Image (cartoon, rainbow, N blue to C red; front, side, top):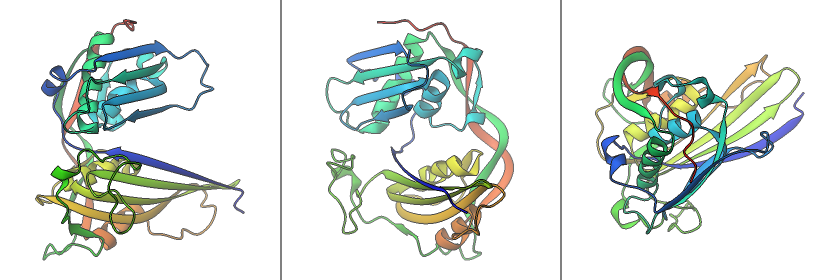
Length: 283
């Protein structure tokens, strides 16, 4: 019997970035302090298109994975305290950056490299992953995946739910991934229902969002170019299924709703190798 219901909304703006670019974009002001509340404050990292970033009760491991958009298997090395010590960050750029949250995450990279005295580099390594490919021989897309018709270059100033120009369905039109998670809990386990919505997003970033549920890195192997709108729904369960699943699992949803397929294989993916990290240099 189901005993509780929890709803969580995650908003992420996704775009590719490089380690070198992190050296050229920096916050104007930034404060990083150890979190002393013993974990009482909910953790979270919130980059905003206006150049601000707030992070509360998060580890350096979590910060690096967010800054570089990595699955946990793609962060290699580093001292043990990277997964245990927790920090709070308040940072702001001098002006709204040209690429919104994408640039804010580059600034976060530079900040972490400096304040934690990181010796780290991006490399390619062969790891277990999923490759997103076409599910149908004729490469026909599914009913919930279509080329975007919005000119996203005109919408860079409006990449937050409060300020974006919404489309007819009430969604921000460009570059934003929404993940709605509903958790149904019982004594036997938890059933998670997820609704994912992309607008004006490259396929590579649609693939990257899937790793949150696939529990492996996901790389794009479709060959599709341009920007796409996509939406799909799926469920997963832990323990003994607390109730029959009401939606398909992730792999079925990707195949039936998007016309794509997640193939499990070992392949080269980006990894961040941390050779050393010093203690926090406080400001």
